[in-house]
Length: 245
Image (cartoon, rainbow, N blue to C red; front, side, top):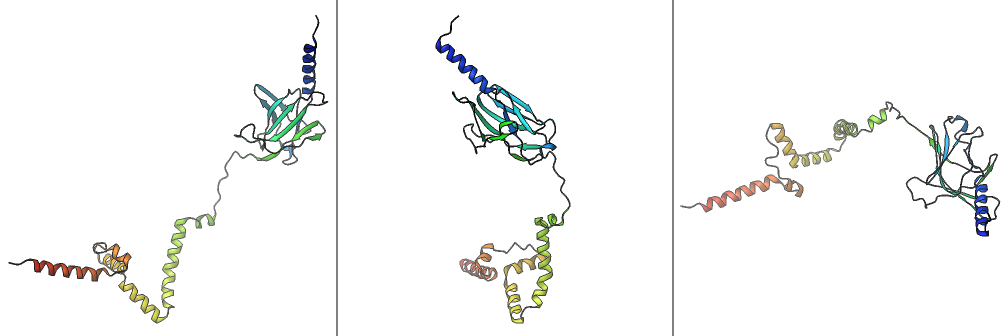
């Protein structure tokens, strides 16, 4: 059986790709949080369309993937206690190169796969070439019970309104006593002529305070009693003049 030149080139290319794919890919954990506090079940995964790789946490606080074929992968660190940023890792084969080209970017959940984030530099460590993942923070599965605080009670709008009303109730008499006599007399005269004073007096006597209250006249600043009396007198005179026998 003889192989032609194209078939021989294809076999060499496949063998070359397999040799490059056998280079290990390493993910390094950051110094914070302390990698030695992570549980033994912590592991990393490389996921792609129809391809899935998994690597356990080693004693050197690394995740080593072996025999990874060229392609584009999503790297995730799965830890019960801490969360880490995912990475997009692309492995490409370059003919004539000693090693395959490996690049990594930060990626985000829910974004388009082509939307790459910040480039992650290659790290040369004790376990070979790799990338250092970035920690997000510790995971919290429980909600802390809120503690008793006086400030939280004072922030309640109902409590604030009650405090303001109490201050006005206690402070207004003292403010009136400290006012100038002329200013105090003018203020009391304005209070007597105010329509709201008539409403309050009618309410205190047991009558309906809204019977003769004119909101439009109150907002316009006119006296309702004068307008009402003049209107009644005018209406009565016109009625008396209109009835003749």
